Structures are given as C-alpha cells and as structure tokens.
Length: 402
Image (cartoon, rainbow, N blue to C red; front, side):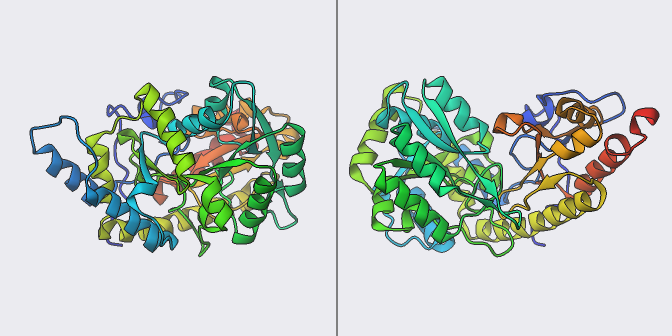
C-alpha cells in the first residue's frame, strides 16, 4: 500500500483521550490497546499536515472566512464520492462539530419537552445532546432479520411519530454503533414516513466515507425532492481522516428556510466561530491523495473486520453481532455468553480493560449486554488484543490462572 496502516503510533503524553484519558487503567504489566472511543490508530494522510503547516507559516491568525477553495473542495468530494451534482457554496455551512449542529437543529425546530425520534441502538452523543437540552427521546428499535442484518421497523416509526406528535427525527446513515449502510429503498421508505408526519430530518452522515464490502452510501437528500428539502445533512472529514482534535464539520442544507433557522441558532452562542487550521485540514484532506488514502483505509478495515468477526465466531460461543457494512465499529451482544458463564456485563468489561483491551461499555447505546469495539488499528495490535482476550477473558480457566 502507498500509505502507512501498519505502524502503531505512540500517543502517550499527547493528550489523547483514547490513551491518556482512557476510562479504566489496566493492571500492571499491560499497556493500553485503544479500542473504545471512535478515533483511529492510523497516521492521517500527509497532505493534511502539509496544508496545516503551510498555513501556520504565515504569522497572522486574525478573523477570517473560508475561501473559495474550501467550498470547491467539498463540492468536488461530494460529487466524486457520493454522486451529488447540484451542490453549491450557499448550501454548505461550517460547523464546529456534528453534535453542535444537532443541537442547533433541535433548538430551531422543537421546544424543551418535545419528543425527538431516534433509532436504537443509539449513538451516545445524540442521547446527551438531547437530554442536556431538555428534549424527550423516543426510541424506535432496530431489529435483526433472519440473516443478522439490522432493519428499521417502519410501522413502529410511524406509530411513535403519531403517538408522541414528533416533528424532528435524527437519522444516522451509516448507522453508529451498528455499522449498517442503508439501501436506497430503505431510506426512501423512511423518508416517506417522515414526510407524512411533517417531520424535519437531521441526517448524520459523518461515517459516509467509511463504506465496506462494495456497499454504497446513499445521501439522504438524494432520495426525493421532498427529502432534498426536508433534510439537514451533516458531514465531516474528522471521522474519515482522524481529525476529531481539530474539530471542523459542515452541513448541507438546500432548503433556505431550514438553513436560515440553523444559522440563526448557531450564531446566538458564538460556538460556531471557524477554526482556521480545521479549514485548511479539510482542504488538505480533500486533495487527490485523500481519495487514495480513504480507499486504502477501507481495504484495511475490511481485513480487520473479517479477522475480528471470524475470530469471534470460532472462539467465543454465544457472542452475537451483525457484521458491519460501514464504520469501523463492531457492536457485540454478550447476553447469552454472560448468562452461560454467570457473569455480568460489568465483570466482562472490566476483565478486558484489566489486561489493556480498552473496549467500550455498550450499555449507554441502549442495549443491556453490549460492548462496542473499535477496529481501526494496525492488524498486529488487533491480533494482540484478541490474544489477550483469548488468554485472560474468554478462557474457561482464566479466573484461576489470572
């Protein structure tokens, strides 16, 4: 491969949440293998650093606005990656983060005490953002079909939109934490339900570049003319290129009324003032090298997903999962395994973190026996993590030997 996906970069002492602020400390003799928070353990594409350094050479960092190249870079990226042809600069707005725009949207189109519809399992950032702003969360559970594929329950969505008089919904595409890449017909049916119930849709598409196994991301706004005008779509290079520490997302909103309301809300708190270096990071990310880097990244992630899924099927009887079609997260259901081994989810989680496998408690995503596993790390470290799990966690005699 042209780019480096095999080096494990030492992030200790670099203010990394994944390492320096991990939720648990491993026992003596074990280092941290970060597999929890959703950032990657790969060095980013070099053109990002080059763009930031080049801008930083200029000694002035006063007030500014994004240049034409910023908008042109997004327009080109969306056209090549997602087939979007009608996008112009006026439809694009800078956001300091996807969740910031989520909050702007719910404040623009709902009031404290109102209900908002989300699919469950639910990304914990949505949960905290809505609860902190006084909204009531109504879940519509995703269901696993006979082939182990997550599906929307359309009847349940329609029922709850009507029962709770909901007019704002958050749609996650691809879905986090389930890794589902929705098909066109699925999105179309969901958008028809939202239309019938006069529901504004906030579509989080931050994972849209990380698509695996020849699946295809379908922009929610591309489904129909109504979806085009009903949807607030959110994107970012931060998830794709591992730039969360630089902030920097963007919205695409075609409907002027929706756009004006969002921009009015975000301007009130001044949270959305633009970071000059994040602007240039996006420009660096969306250069031709960035397209190549993402394609290589997805191949690496496919190998990691294959390895993890095959290892679990072979060695961890009773652990259930749906193989992700996108993202780099694996959402695991340990209910049967825990009950068969008379162990709580908390005990299982702690037995992993004790040996440095820093996986994520999946219960806050709204499943009682879940763990979320980040697979975006060099394969050598992934293998090492599973070796530790084999020896110290899932081995029948682990509690005796360890």
